[in-house]
Image (cartoon, rainbow, N blue to C red; front, side):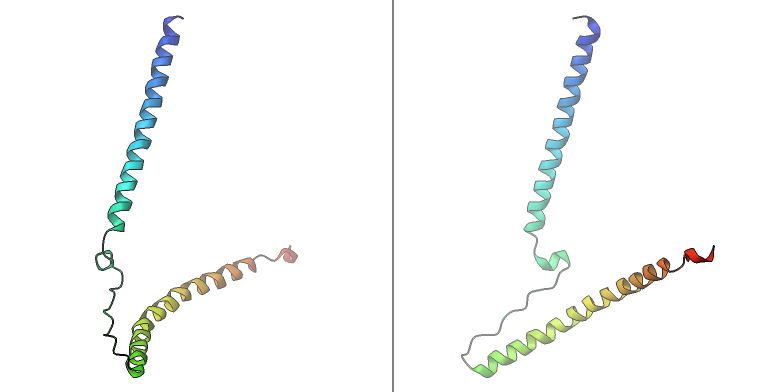
Length: 107
């Protein structure tokens, strides 16, 4: 083997080791990030907080009131989801109008 092949082999091995180290570091970083984000409480992530449930009394009226309170707390979330859909429908309408802007029969 001449000197050019030896240098090329050393460079190729160094390149492969570098690629291996980069992927290994990225995998460990992602695993650490996933572990940390999994263990963060929802309140710190900006999500909704879990409300404490009322004490179980065995009274059906208390159970119904707890269900009604829970549904009242979910109503703002459902309204926010409905508000997220309205820009999408505007985009769909704009895309539909774009398809009608070209009329092949005018030429």
